Amino acid sequence: MAKSMRSKSKRRFRAIKRVEVFAPVEEERLQQQAKEQAEAALVESLHMQTEKTSENDQTIVDDDEEQRGRKGAPLAAPKMEIDGFEPTPKQLKRQKMQLYLSGNQFRKKKRIAKLKATGRKAPKIARKGRKI
Image 1 (cartoon, rainbow, N blue to C red):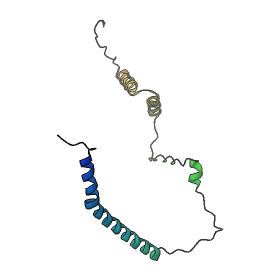
Image 2 (tube, helix red, strand yellow):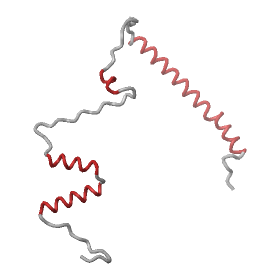
Image 3 (cartoon, rainbow, N blue to C red):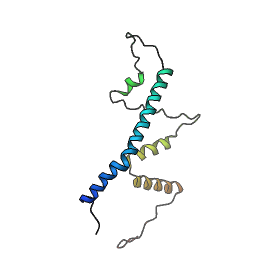
Image 4 (cartoon, one colour):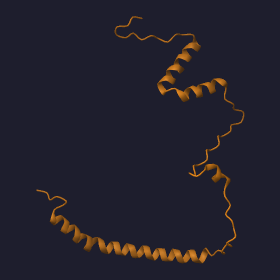
């Protein structure tokens, strides 16, 4: 029968593995990271020497930040302008209608409008108990 994860023998062997197998690897990895960080700090200090700014300098506040408000919401991206394109009143009406109708309602209205334009009526569907 299989041993559960909480059994004493499983816990004991996991503890042994932690000490004998994983500890040396972890220690080596930490030493390597410390060495790389020390080298990176040395390189930064050599190449990134900057003059100290005076304490009287004032930070410049972006106009964008003022417009965003306290929450710092991103500004709305401006709409791309296309040369010589202006939506027709029919397109504007369609866009407005699409905003307040559900997807199915919009599709139904669009289909009925298309049928009206061609001069046909919407087909009636014969359902159980309904006469056409």
